[in-house]
Length: 267
Image 1: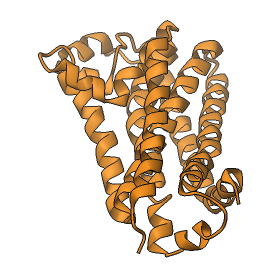
Image 2: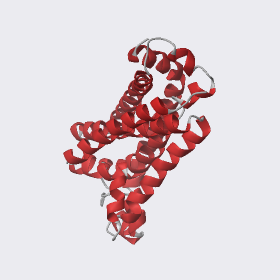
Image 3: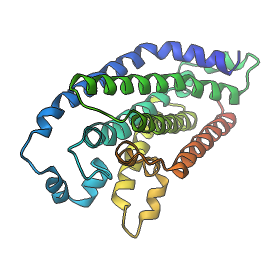
């Protein structure tokens, strides 16, 4: 049994959950886009309204967007800044929290490891199982946004939408790596999943609360520091340094998970 065999088997067990999550996200996209026409016709000065909010609130839930009159700016605030970075990111970290811990709790890890497969390959296989899940959710939401924009006769920049989903997908993979490390370290599903969600949620707040303060350096520990949906979708700018850091962080987390699992006693 090799990494791809493990990945294929693990993914097949999770297909139903991924389909359900994708359906919920499509519904969320549909409702969000359906509100935009009435939102745009409102007499409220949303720019002035945004400026009235505390800076920490704007950083966390609005990001770099200053204009909500365009569909791109609206989607950043209503979909990508909160739903994608926090909720979808937490879901994938939560799901990954059971990758190794679930096998240990069911006492099935030993059955796999007695075959000619190392613990490192076992961990890598589990990680690879989540990549098609991330890709599927990413594509489904992308398609739903494009289809929804067409239904309300609004134009959206496809290139910039591809940018936010490309970097956004990489961010979700990094969240999977967080859950994988927690799963390898704790080897108890509830504890691993709770820790994974706590790390994603805590790092989201850390980035928001430390920005433009004397403690801004602490925000560099947060994955959300390296993805700005507003810059990607509205301005069309890619922070390639941030992309490199997300890739590096993912690799480091997977290596750490493999190392931790190698050293743990399963008895």
